[in-house]
Image (cartoon, rainbow, N blue to C red):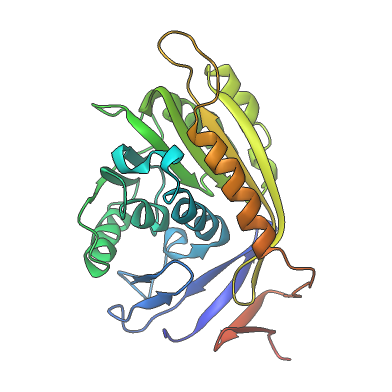
Length: 273
C-alpha cells in the first residue's frame, strides 16, 4: 500500500488522495479490481491525481452495468471527459469496443496510459482534450464524467461538450458530489437540446472509511436523428444498477473529519485521535 494515504474534505464530500515518495508504487483498489499509480510527480500532486468519491462511484456503476446486455457496452465507443485518474475509463475498457480517456492535462493523459498498461487494458487510448470547443471526429455512444463540475464557469461548457461529442441517441453519465456550482447543470443540458434524469444517493461508503455525503448521477441522452426523445434502453440498466449500488454502499454512521483523517489498514480515524 502507498505511504501517507489520507482522506481530504473538499466541497462537502470526501475523496482519497495519496502522497507517494516512490511514484512507481501502485495503489490497490480492490473494490474495482484495479491497481493504479497516483502520481507522475509525487512532490507536486495535482487535483486530478486524487481518487475522489465520484470517480469511484462512476467506475463501480459501470462495472455493474457492463454485465447487462441491455446496457450495450460490448459495442460501445466511449469517451471520458476530465478523466484525471481515468478510473471509469479503465473499467469501461474491460468490455467496451473502444475507450478514449481525455483530460486538459497532458500529464493526466500519460498517467491514464500508464495505468491502462499496468492493468492489461488494451482498448484504452488517451488524448488531451479541453471542455472549450471539444469536438470528436467520430461522435461516441457513451460520454463519461466524474466531478467535472467544480468550476461554475465550466458547467455550460461541459454541457455543450457532451452535446457535441454524443451520437444521436447516445448516453452520458456524470457523477457529482452535489457541489453548489453544479446546480445549473440540468438547465444547461436542457438548453443544449439534451435530456436528463437525475438520480441521488446519500451516505455512500465507496471505500473503507471513505463516505461521500451525497452523490448525484446525471443520466443524459441525446434525441435520435428522427427526433425520438425517449430515453435509450441502456438508461434502464443504469437506473436499476444505481439503485442497487447506492443501497449496498449506504451507511448510517457519520465519519467526523476535521481537515484531514488518515487511512491505516482500511480504517479512518480523526487526526490526533
